[in-house]
Length: 82
Image (tube, rainbow, N blue to C red):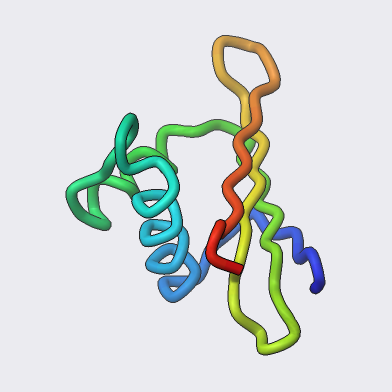
């Protein structure tokens, strides 16, 4: 496994993170479509993404840091099926 840091996500990465988000947080915070998820991401300030990539180059986890109300926040999602 490798961790890749980025500030900008590719379309493929956004799609995978959208799927991962909804599979892990489906009961509390669910996005109906990718556009809604992208709006959430666009609203975060100073976002940094940390992508967990497996040996087959598949995205299996995501940590992200961002600024909200002048405070540092973070989120972490790991694919529980791996």
